[in-house]
Image (tube, rainbow, N blue to C red; front, side):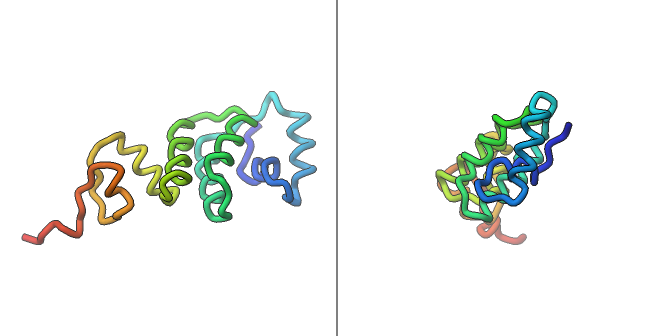
Length: 124
């Protein structure tokens, strides 16, 4: 049974209005629940928007159900959000770049990885 983002949020949040229902479903179907890394990305976005600990939210969700896909990338990105103030998508781009130079005008990458700053490229 696929666990969508609102289900996992209901389990993670203390004050979610669907918390009791989600807990009941979780107890009855724990062994058959799974989700994808896309759900973790959405959780990362929600946690960021709600000023929650992104690393904790993503990691906790990953322990609740089986996650299919590239979990490590999302967890690592969440760490960059928490530790370096990245936005979720900038953090995902950084992790996915795997050390390659990033072509971007975004100063966020300046002290973390090699960057080709589009603002300094002169037009020919």
